[in-house]
Each structure stands twice: as C-alpha cells, then as structure tokens.
Image (cartoon, rainbow, N blue to C red; front, side, top):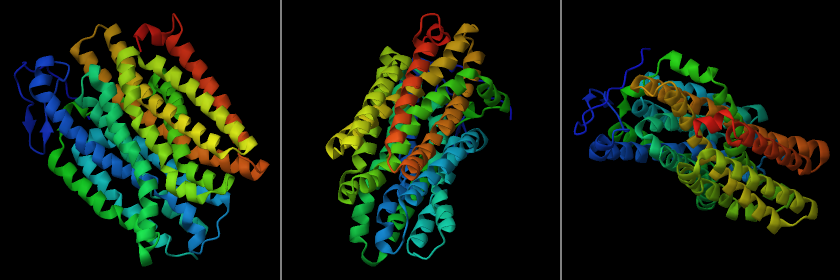
Amino acid sequence: MTATTTHRPAPTTSPVRRRGRWIEQWDPEDPAFWSRTGRAVARRNLVFSVLAEHIGFSVWMLWSIVVVRLNEVGFSLSVSQQLWLTAVPSGVGALLRLPYTFAVPVFGGRNWTTVSALLLVVPCLGLAWAVSTPDIPYGLLLAVAATAGFGGGNFASSMANISFFYPEREKGWALGLNAAGGNIGVAVVQKLVPVVVVAGGGLALAGAGLVYVPLAVAAAVLAWLFMDNLAEATADPGSMAGAARSGQTWLMSFLYIGTFGSFIGYSAAFPTLLTNVFDRPDIALAWGFLGALVGSVSRPLGGRLSDRVGGSLVTAGSFVLMTAGALGALYSVTGEHLGLFFASFLALFVATGVGNGSTYRMIPAIFRGAAVERGGSAEDLAVMRRQAAGAIGIASAVGALGGFLVPICYAWSRDTFGSIVPALQVYVGLFVVMLAVTWYAYLRPGSRGAALGV
C-alpha cells in the first residue's frame, strides 16, 4: 500500500475530506491549522475512541472477576485453573494487537473501530453461555475465555490511530487520556460485575456478559457516525517494517512489559490473589477494582509529566516505585499483612499507570528525534510518524504479553512452592533490570536516547 505524503495546508484551511469520512490533508503541527479546526476534530475522534476502547478493556477483563464466583455456581476449579482463565484472554489480546495495528492503515481508524467494537459481542455471548454450563470441559471453558482477547486487541489500533491526530507537543497527554479511558474499563468491570451478579437473579454470572452486548453495539454505532479516517495513517509495509527493524522499538517493547504488562497482569490476578492468598473473596469483590482504577487514572499523569520533563526520566521513576511496591507486597505475604499487601499493590498500580503514560510518550519522541537528525523534512517527519505508530502497535503487543505471564508466574509459584513469594521475587528483580536499562539507554550521558532528547 502506498504511503500518502503529508502536505502542510495553509493556516486557515480546513481538513480536506473525501467520501467515507476520510481526511486527505492533516497537519496538527501547524499551530494555525490546529487551533482553527484540527483540535476540535482530534478531540471528537479521541472521545469516541476512548468509549470503544473502554468497552474493549472491560470485555477483556471480564474473566478476572467472574472466576472468583465460578466455584459458587457449580464449577470445581483449582487456583491454578482460575489463574489460567485470567491469563489466556491477556495472551490472546497481546497476539491480536499486531494485526489490529495493521488494520488501521488497511481499513481506516474509524472503520476498524466500528468493526472491532462489534466483535466484542462474541466473547460476551460466549461467557454468558459458558458460565451457565458448569459441566463444560475445562479446555472449552479456556477457549471461550480466549475470545475475550478481542477486547485486548482494540488498544493497539486505538492508540496507533489517535497518535496521528495530535501534534507532538500534546501526544503524551492525548495518548494518556486515550489509554486511561480504556484502562479504566478494567476497574469498571471489576466493580460492575459483582453488582450485576447480585442483581441478576436467575441470570447470575451470565449477566456479566450480557450487560456488555448493547454497550459494544452502541460503541460501534457511535464510532461509525462520529469518527474519521486519516489518509496519513495509511502506512505502507515499508514503514511498518522500518519500525520492526529499529532496535528502539524492541527496547521500548521490553520496558512496556514492565509497565503495561504489569498493569494488566496484576489487574487480572489481583482479585484471585486476594481470594486465595488471604481468603478474602469479600474484599476481592468489593475493593479489588481499586488497583485497576488508580493505575488507569494515573496514566494521563505519566503522559503529562513526560511532556514537561521527558518520558525517560518519568519511566525510570516509575520503575523505582514499582520495585518498592513489589518489595512491600513480598514482605506482606511472608508476614500475612493484608493491609500492607493491599497498599503495596495500589502503589504498584499507580507506578504502572505513570509508566504506561511515559513509555508511550517516549515512542513518538524517539522517532521524531531520528527524523530531525536526518534533517527534519516534511517527508521524513511523515514517515517517522507512521513508523512510530507501527512501533506503538508492536510495543503494545509485546508489552501485553506481561498480562499473560504475570498470572502464569503466580500459578507456577503457587503450584511449585505453595506460595506466591517466589513470583514476587522475580518481579522485584525484573523491575531493577528495567530501571537499569532505562538509565543506560535513555538517561546516561552519551546514550542514544539522551542524544534524541527522549
């Protein structure tokens, strides 16, 4: 597919449109264009992108709270089986993020948002059927849970699409808001599902899936009516391949495992850990959502701070706090201090949210810096914007694998050692390594990241 060259419109020119809500000319870096028409169009697309992504995240994490109640309705699942049910949707969502990123250039951001929202109906109806069938084979139960990964794929396409709408100086805040609106869907579903289950009567756990069917359809309809496709987002395979060839893409993917992977993995596992480590399902159902909530609302803060002081510095700070939180959780488990365990995980969630915002802010800054090094022509900047969008998709896919690995690591630790302590020790070590990598690659004087001004 041939890349569309970006032309700078005159300051008073509105976006040039064609049929199908495609915008041909888009230059948010032009202050006059941005203030006259660009900001309003970008904001409208951001609002409906957030809505669709929010529903996607909610569906993605439905099983994280449903598994807490499965044994009460006729299932007989071990702790490891429950953790696998929370891990598999995360793994599938991670794998879908790459094709979802490619879908934006192929179909257009508005078109793909509509399709991806409609796909969420499948896991919702599947869950409603599966939880109403206690004698279902465990393998089939896992397969149904895997379809919730459709919701995880939404994030990559949404972030890649929105990254094109905003100027470099506002990308951190915009991407932070977009991601936070989606991330907070985890907290909403973990708070909403217990209420729906209690009020559902005969529907019981099936209501957890059924309630999201009309919401997914509504998100699709609103995206179709009010969002736009950007011609600039029509990336050629060469641009995507360029992002894949860049070592910076894979370095940021590794760091994103520590930030987003931790956020989504801990969000999936937190209610199950509260239930099985401390035998407090009441706290899991009533307050387990707080972790995902504070992690979500802190994400825009990470983006805003990064806009001001640089993403690499904020990312390093988030890994320091994550290490401290993991150490607190480790001590609380060995000492059986539920209050400290809960507080330590809240600190972890805040740090992951801030780190999510800062790492996503670093990616476009890295590629823009590389374009400036080449001379900063309009063509170079346009190519690098497309490569940055591809890098965002790759990093989101790799990082989301953490959502699969975290619950699996807990399951391994529990099965092998009878405790989650070894898993927490692994996380402490990883956070220290990621802190060191951030400093060496982006903060160390003379490093490539420092030269790019990340």
